[in-house]
Each structure stands twice: as structure tokens, then as C-alpha cells.
Image (cartoon, rainbow, N blue to C red; front, side, top):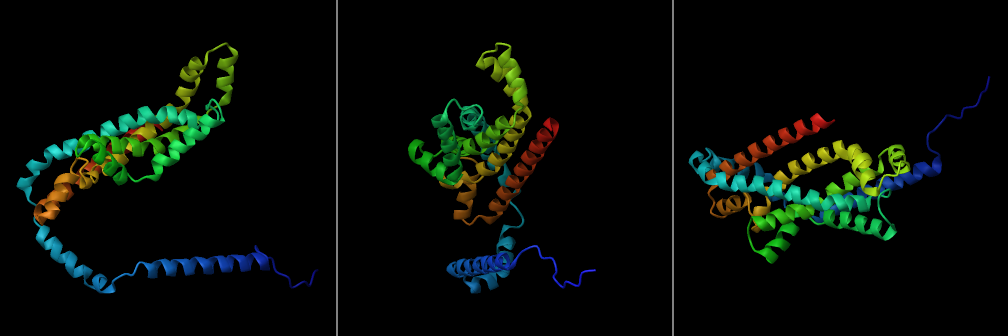
Length: 264
């Protein structure tokens, strides 16, 4: 029998040192970032009392005010639906450009990837501000902001689904003399259909939530009266709006989850 006292270790000495200094550097960065925030701990201590005071001014909600927010709520739903539909129309060709197995050439592939990255990198509020400046306040700016922000997310997931298709059926249809359009219709589309429906419903659910806040910059929806009532310190009406937003988000999430479950 061996009398060796050596014990097995997953990492050698060099790897352990690297992991230790990596962890140490991460902690230093975390502490530096926290200090850079310059948190006012005095406000943090009084936060529970201020929150209780705010809630006392909010409660009970102004039930009568709910009649005045029906229009903005419907506008929020319309913005999310139209924005998602427009995003899908623009995202599908971008997805085919951004998929390595359907892009016609390298420049087209890089263009698709650039559009996907660019539209995803800018927050919906920034897009809303841009379109409010261009088209003025209103639902049109909101629809365009939602749609442009959704292109990258939708196109990225659809492109990934395209890249994962079974190449065998594509090659079989091509060998039978099918045109590129026939290959697209009879081979690619049926394979990505479940992913397409799932991504569309998921993005609509996300867009419902986004549509509730873009009104803060004048892009329509329920965010407009919410910002107005906050400015007037009408807290009972604010609570009414917040409850309506919560209800709208819960309904949209339930619908989205049901639709995604049906296509799985």
C-alpha cells in the first residue's frame, strides 16, 4: 500500500492564487462602486417612516378616479400591441440576416448583427425621448419607441431558432428543385413557428410593462396621468393608477404564459 500523504485537489497552487486574487479584486471593485454611490444613510434610516407616511396619504385609493384612466389604459394596451406587431415586421428580415445559415453574405450577416445589438443597447425611455422630439408627444412616439426597442430582442431569438433548424429537410427540399422561397415556406418557417409564437407573446408581455412608463416622457399611455398626479401630489389617484397598472401587467403575463404553454 502507498504511504503517500498527498491529497487530491481540484486546483493547483497557481490556480488557487489566481482565484483568490480574482475574488479579492471583485470585492475591491464592489466596495469602490458602493462608496462611489455616496449613499446618504440618514435618508435610509428614515425611509420606513417616510414610506408609511406616503402610504397613509395614498390610502384609500380614489375609486371614482378609475373612470378617468380607462382611456389611458386602453391606449397603453394599443401601444403595446401595435409596437409589438411593428417590431415583428421589422425583426423577421433582420433575423434572417443575423442568422449564419440564412444570411446571403458576410456583410449582410454583420449588418443584421449590428441592428440586433444597436436596437437592444438603447433603453426604451431613450427611444421614447427621441421619437417625442421627432413626432411630438403622443401614442405614435410610444409605438415607435416600443417597436424599435423590440427589434433586437425579437430578431436575436428568432435568429437563434433559425440557426438551430434541421438542415436535412432544407437539403432535401433543395435537392428536389425547390426555389429559395419554397425552402423558406416549407422547411424553415414550420421549424421556427413555435419559437416565433413564443418570442412574440413574450415580447408583447414585456412591452405591456414598458408601455406603462414611457408616458413619463410624453409618449402616451397610462404613464402620462401617473406623472401628472405625482406632480400634483394627488396620492390617492396615484394609488388607483398603480393598482390598475398591476392588474394590467398580471393579465398580460397570464395571457402570455398561456399562449407560450400552448405552443410548447
